[in-house]
Length: 109
Image (tube, rainbow, N blue to C red; front, side):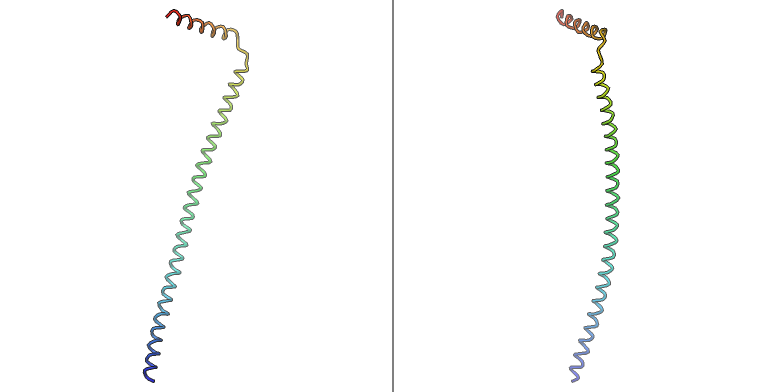
């Protein structure tokens, strides 16, 4: 009978030790999970800030491209107006005279 009582006391001691270890491991797990959440939230905030910076940069680039595009359209409109405007005879005759002179010089050379 005494052997059974000693065996039960021994098993109870082992059980309490295992229970204490289980609680210690659980507390450590909770601690690590909280740390991981903080790290994940920190990373998420860093990623969000990085995305915001990239969006802001792309927005500025797009605005610059729009300005360049608008300037290009204005130039094309002006060129179109210049092309539609009637040429003055002096410019046409002068240009033709210069062209003839260049041709004559080339023939003489």
